[in-house]
Image 1 (cartoon, rainbow, N blue to C red):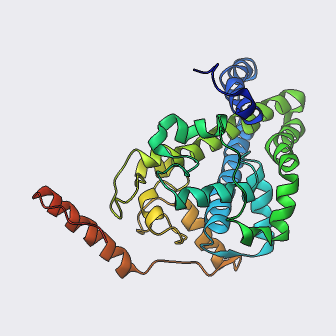
Image 2 (cartoon, one colour; image 1 turned 120 degrees about the vertical axis):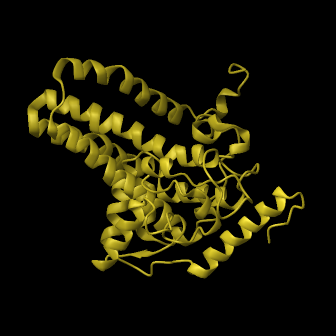
Amino acid sequence: MFLSLPSERINWLTSSFLIGTAFLTVTALPVYLWQFGIDWFQLAMFFGFIAVTGFSITAGYHRLFAHKSFEAKWPLRLLVLIFGAGAFENSVLMWTSEHRRHHKHTDHEEDPYDITKGFFHAHIGWLLFKLNPAPPFDNVLDLQNDPLVRWQHRHVHLLAVFVGFLLPTLLGFLWQGWPGALGAFLISGVARVVVVQHCTFFINSACHTLGRQPYSTRCSARDSLLLAFFTFGEGYHNYHHEFQHDYRNGVKPWQYDPTKWLIWALSKLHLTSRLRRVAPEKIEATQRTIARVRRSELVGSPEPVN
């Protein structure tokens, strides 16, 4: 079956990168750790780069640019674009175009990471084998008017290499010479990219497979506390699909959503503003409707969801 795939349509560059970074993580990284071990500086850099690139995707690419759930001052927007590139998830223009298409066509053929085509396809297969021509950027005209977004789109690959690989390698060299540089490249560069990317991929796959649907049954999106821990709070995906313009995914005060807390904290520093929220009574009404439908299904007389 693999040999029958049209080779001219396989995304060779993306496939090579995803497979190559994963291969280095499970081969070269253990050898390095066996030879040199790991110190607090390397661990701090690893988690620091996970945080800054991960939040740039969840708070920046996703909630700021894709859904316009809040506004941000230009220095913060610039930082998000620079460090978001370091996650190696392409430019915010392409990322947003694909994500908006996902929301518009969830669980249907036009959905880029359609879960009905299988867990593997939704998780990573859609990136490895792009068998259809890339659709136009006709759903991101608002972002095309943003000079910072256009700048990042033009230079995203250079930014990604610098932030994702060169910067941690340089910091490692300054800390411990060439052994430190190699360790930083493998730990804070390669392995960190693999972790951040697969956390993002889990939103497309696992968050459409595992968990509850307390707000809507119109699509496969689900809420999961477990997945929220691995996705910076994006695991409350059922709520997000129902109320996609809310800056919160974990809408309850006790729900684990560090991206929500970060956006709120930045608003107190006047770096973010106009945080969009769904009215509590609307959320409660939606939950009551779903509960009523489920009760009617239990007694054998299904009630349609409005």
